[in-house]
Each structure stands twice: as C-alpha cells, then as structure tokens.
Length: 164
Image 1 (tube, rainbow, N blue to C red):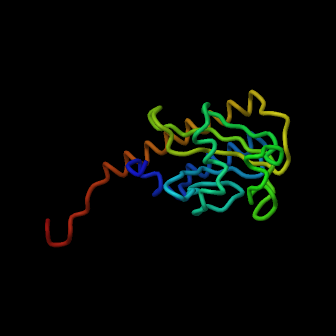
Image 2: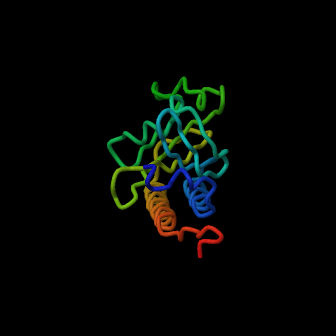
Image 3: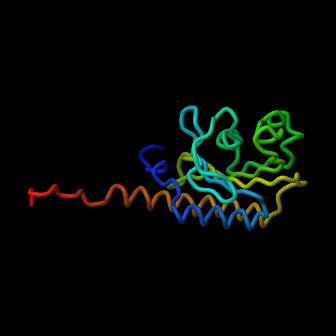
C-alpha cells in the first residue's frame, strides 16, 4: 500500500471530486476515501468530513476492508451490534446511522482503502443506482491512485545546482 503513494495523495483535488460525486449520487451527508495502515485510518479525501488521521479502532471502514464483497452496506448502524457503541454512531463524536463503502483496488488487486458514504438517517437498503455509483467511485479512485503512483515513480529527479 505504501508503494502506491496513496498516503501522499492527501487532499488531492481529483479524489476530493470523486468523494463529492459519490456523496451526491448516494444522497449522503458525508463521503470519505480512507486508507487503513497500522492502528490508523487516514482520510485522504472527503466531502463533508475532515481529512486527517483517526484511530482505527473506531473505524467503520476497517469492517468494509475485510468484508466478503466489494460493497459493504450497513443500513442502520445503531441496529448493528458491531457499531451501536461506536463514537461515530452513538453521538460521542458523530451521529451517523447509514454507511456504504466500496473497496478501492488499483489494478484489480488487493484493496488499498475504501470510499464510503455516510448519512445521519438509516435506510432500508441501497438502491441499484446507489450501488453502481459506489462501485464506479471505487474504480475512479483506483484509477487516480494508479495515476498518482505512476507520476510519483516517473517524476524526474532534480539535478543539484552545480552538477549539470
């Protein structure tokens, strides 16, 4: 994951736009692109949420990363015992009720993170259009991460002054 340069993509305008688009298409209150590394969840792009580092133990995205499907949906976080006491759900930090996340797989390989949409109201499920939007957002994010990695690996090395 470190080799992709994804942690260096914090605040990337293209990734931010992908988050904004996903949030609007899924009608959420917030959307974030998260990378989990060690004991930390890094939010490197977001809409309606602050980018930065958060404790992994409170992460909703950690569950999505290890799900059996590329799309992980929790229609009502309060009704799910895995999340009911989470500070992002119980009001200690936030009051999110709905969570949908899609795995980001550069080159179709192992996931490097997730793009997720959260809302403050529970929902009965996810619609086909919302499902497609989430999966498409993950593909777009993966393509951008590949591009960032490529640009990082092919950037010319500056010549120190006097060495030309």
